[in-house]
Length: 81
Image 1 (cartoon, one colour):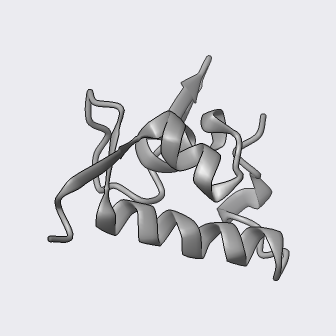
Image 2 (cartoon, rainbow, N blue to C red):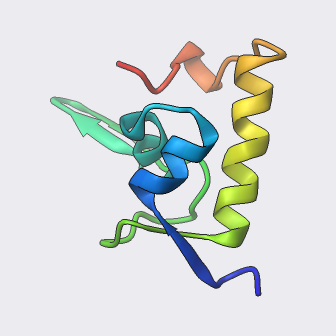
């Protein structure tokens, strides 16, 4: 059940009220010249834009920590850059 793909990345972002780019960063990480930011939710990036139930729940918790409790991610990155 936890690994069941239930939402597209865009739909999950809309439901969680978080920018899609932020959710994508949390799921798959990102890179910029000279710097790589690993995924926060997934162990390794994957080439799919579908969110499992477990990832959706974890992203929801992360949203709450970030939005309500103002918890910063390691290094102070918001994922919105």
